[in-house]
Length: 120
Image (cartoon, rainbow, N blue to C red; front, side, top):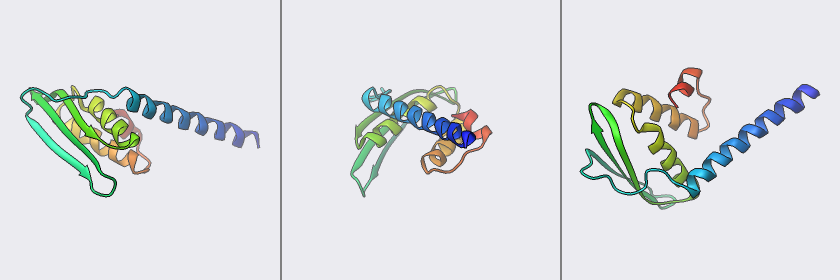
């Protein structure tokens, strides 16, 4: 029984950490505001809940040099946008694809591999 209790405690601590990270990104979003002369300018929305975001990126030497996110949505979508912006800034295009794929799988509740965790 002790093994289960400590295992549950570790899972609870991990949940607390994830909650703290999400709350931090919701309360203090990163990379808000537009990017001057963006190379990439996307509008994304979720018609089911009304989340709407504009994502802009500046790319220099095949790397994301600036990210800007504007829009509105629930706490989870705002935190996710902030996390994603922080995640891709400074990465090369191939690294961005790998990171976004792993991030998407993580948000979907799919267990990710050690290699995928490394790109996050």
